[in-house]
Amino acid sequence: MDKKTRVPVREQDPAIRSRNFDEVSFGYDHKEALLEADRCVQCKNPRCVAACPVNIQIPQFIKAVLDGDMPGATSIIGKDSSLPAVCGRVCPQESQCEGACIMGIKHEPVAIGKLERYVADWARKNKYTPIEDIKPNGKKVAVIGSGPAGLACATDLAKAGCDVTVFEALHKPGGVLVYGIPEFRLPKEEVVDYEIEQVRKLGVKIECNVVVGRTVTIDRLMDNEGFHAVFVGSGAGLPKFMGIPGENLNGVVSANEFLTRSNLMGAYAPDSDTPIYVGRSVAVVGGGNVAMDAARTALRLGAEVTIVYRRTEKEMPARVEEVHHAREEGVAFQMLTNPVAVLGNEKGWVTGLKCIRMELGEPDDSGRRRPVEIPGSEFDIPCDVAIIALGTSSNPLIARTTPGLEINRHNGIVADEKGVTSRPGVFAGGDVVTGAATVILAMGAGREAAKSILEYLGV
Image 1 (cartoon, rainbow, N blue to C red):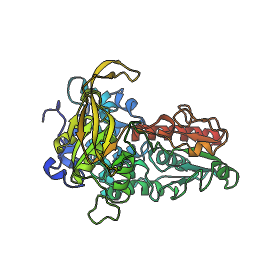
Image 2 (image 1 turned 45 degrees about the vertical axis):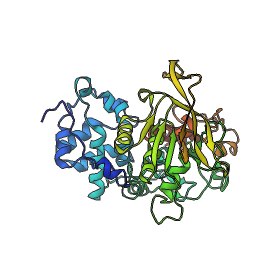
Image 3 (image 1 turned 90 degrees about the horizontal axis):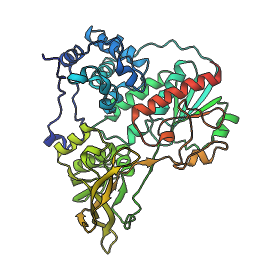
């Protein structure tokens, strides 16, 4: 086979998958994984490792795959990642490890993410768990939030011998992995639940239905319950809206609520007690991965779906793969378009979006060209439901109930790159600090904070 081109990944047919919630990608089989692993040139100075937020030893695990040493490949990845099957599916590898791949300079980069998924899926199917030699160090640490930042931090702390308890506000652990990413991208029971169980096997305890700031405070955890340090990885779950007329109409919903109801409450199931109303036509406002997830979910629930985005496809923050999949499945795209009002009827229900055409001006602070309104170009987009996917910010509850904890103007906790906050013994990382970002960046922040916590505890 030509080593210049990566081994393609088999997927469900778009016409079939657009009507089910089964995983889109089938992943590599054994033969495909070996062919792809053989494309890795085993760099002496692997740029891919430096570009990975958790620094997985990528050439080493790929070499183990090629040698047929799957336990070895699993152990290599496991040293740096507690969620390999998750990351292999949802990480933006094209802008991280694969984006730095030497092969990508002249040819197609090695499909590192697909190989990571292959290894993780092998471990799950073969019930293989690397043995950890853990010696208790007598230190007790609380982790707030069971999303990727919290799980990564808890994993490293547990391996170092800490007694770790994770507190989760919802009734099921996993954070954004279970409520924010659709089943067709990330299977919950098969993948997420399994990998969380691997974290539990390290001795990590997970307590659900605990709203820190209400059920218990950080002060109480440290002063009354014996925790020597606390890591806050509660994410950014507070949705942003446009602030335009009509946003309080029935049928306007945040992508957060839409995806949470679909995932955690099984609202996509025909016999669900909490069905999601999508009507005949849905408009999704936004151009990120969450917008793609909401659009593709609404499509599977039977609606005609249009993405409304104020820039062009080139400026979309969503992964190229997700945009491609959405188009294949039948999602329509209305580019250079910005809603200025939500239209409704006399009964208070959404009937459409009043929009204006945009053109791109000079770059803004994000480096993307700023969208500018074209006067007199207003037009309407009919819809029964408008899903707003414009990002999220942190819930200020924890910060406001923790004296001495500094927050920024977006309600996020102020912490340095090592996770150190203004409150001694309290550390933070992931979306609660940076705002909404990626799973792997949150994991990297959780790991950095774990190092700081161990240094603070003197172990």
